Image 1 (spheres, one colour):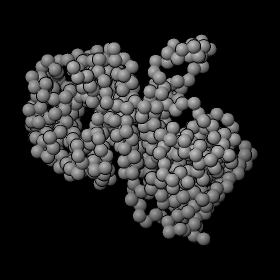
Image 2 (cartoon, helix red, strand yellow; image 1 turned 30 degrees about the vertical axis):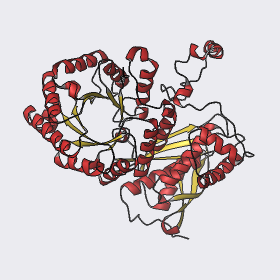
Image 3 (tube, one colour; image 1 turned 135 degrees about the horizontal axis):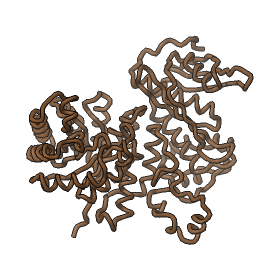
Image 4 (cartoon, helix red, strand yellow; image 1 turned 45 degrees about the vertical axis):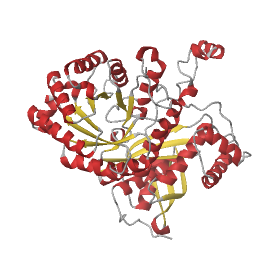
Length: 519
């Protein structure tokens, strides 16, 4: 008898990107998509092709270049959206068009300004339109958990008759409670006569902290596709955390009696990549992939772990790709040692790439007595940012001074377009404020600093500091990250990174003239 399997549908690149402050470039989306393919998710929702030219291009590129998973594009129940989704997907080997339309009375009345019959007709029409392009069509009744059940049954039957292969029950505002959600799914299977012709899917949001619980309850109730995001990112409080769902199913197969196609050893590197690219830090006590997930402080727990790991560890950290015992490198380490450790952490580099990273490693090793795995991850994140982020300005040099009785002052030297060199100075309320003001003056690009987070990568006074900033310009938020053993330098790098994203995404071809003249 074939093993019962649950399809894992990843929407990190679509719903995950809707997290406030996240804005990924096309190259960053492609990098994540390739890693999701290594993770062996079944479906990658690459974006919302009709939403912008950038999203269209990202969906198109991922559809062409990423092999293995089904590549999907979201589309409103609108002819242009469906057409654009197909145009973006048609170059791929395994495309899916995902059509959605609100179904709850509160959405129908207040957002769509339609009636139920009009919504039904529109859903059937657009699923039929998508089916003419592509055999693999998914339909999501948005806000399904607040939809009148009888109307939901009728809508699902109609779209399945129109050609939907998958129907996705969306808990759009995180309204569901696990026991009630499981009952709804059971009722759907009992009251939609053609339900056997489509896969029953769920898409849960985390507004009440129940997204994973609802998703797992759905699997027990017969759902065979689960949608979610890596690290649980997404609109408002986020989506269901895919890594938690996957490991829940794997760890408690005695309960769920199903499996997934996922290579769980790729969970940790996937999680770290998504955190690095999105700028969304992972809380230390996050289940499965948090920094403390496999750390033990209690003496009783430590005693048990030393005797038998299963006493206090439900999962083997190796099973999710958690790095083993750290090989500590230093300034005397060579390329072979660095390559071996990077490969153990999941980084496969060409000779030229290794040469570039080795130079950066040597500079770091001169500042730190020991370079740990977490230091190497931070170093690789910096190298990836330098290679993939849009670059208009680069921080070349920075000087600052201050004290509790002095006014903080900073001077920066910036490399700009056409090899121009810009420099300026500013004072501020502390060295970070002074540095940001000096960068604004030197580049002529300003934005309000909306969020500033700093954390230590490893223990010790010589630890690398990682800074994440979000800047706001006219209500649009852009994220930047930087790392250095000097936290002020890391802050400057992060601020420049955020301004570069602002310039790129806003299409500022003519950057305002700086206040100083190029040297």
